[in-house]
Length: 140
Image 1 (spheres, helix red, strand yellow):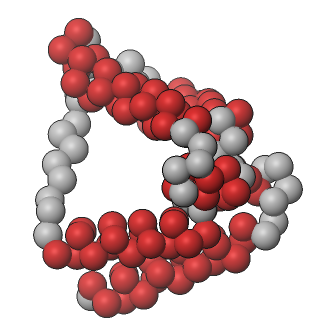
Image 2 (tube, one colour; image 1 turned 120 degrees about the horizontal axis):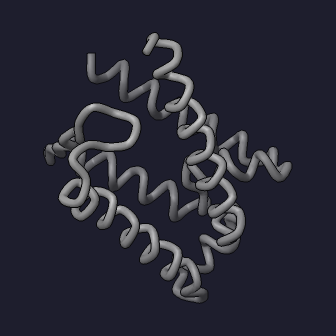
C-alpha cells in the first residue's frame, strides 16, 4: 500500500472523530460559556454527566481496548502515553483552571462554538494562543 493510501483512512477517521467531538460538545451545551460557568458555580450539574461519560470512554479506549485488540485499526501498534508531573505542569494547570473559571471557555468547546457563530470566543482563543506562545518562548 502506498503512503498516500495509508494516510487517507487516517485523515477520514480524524475528520470523523473531530466532527463527532464537536457535535458532542455542541449537543451537551459545553460551547456556551454561561452553561460552563453555571457548572463551575455549582448551579448546574449537567456537565458532570458529560465529563463522566468522557472519562468512561477514555478508560475503555486506553485501558481495555489494547487488551482486546492486537493492534489498532489504523496503526501498527498501540502507543504509550506517558505523563510527567513537574512544577510547570502544576503551574500550567492552575493557570488553565483560573482562565477557565473566569470566562467559562475551554479550547475544544471554543473552537466548536465558532461553528455555531459565536465569534466573541475568538478573543478567548487569541488569549490561549498568546499564552501558549509565551510559554513556548519561555521554555526555550
